[in-house]
Image (cartoon, rainbow, N blue to C red; front, side):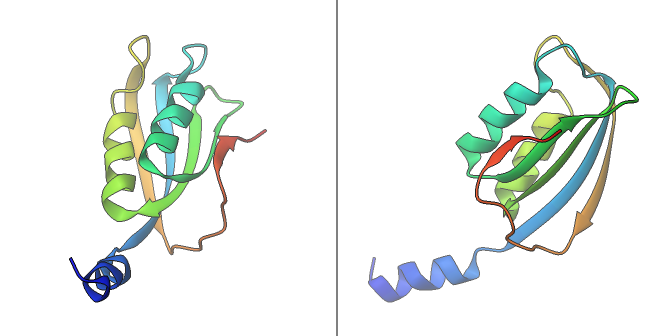
Length: 104
């Protein structure tokens, strides 16, 4: 592959940002830690946190196909989680994160 082709592939990679609220038995089951592992393996940046109401909130940015892959995983979560609902809000990509970690 020529350098121009590689550069064009990078330019054509669509970036995405998603804000998720995950409901169910999603706290006390290591959901945040598994999410970090998945996000890092996919090159996703952002954060995950436990909410006061028992939900898990995630903001993620990265290549659109990788973001969608992490969202699909969130519908299942780790083995001990019981995911009842995933609310997704697509937002404009900002590129504001350098890594993926736990917030709050």
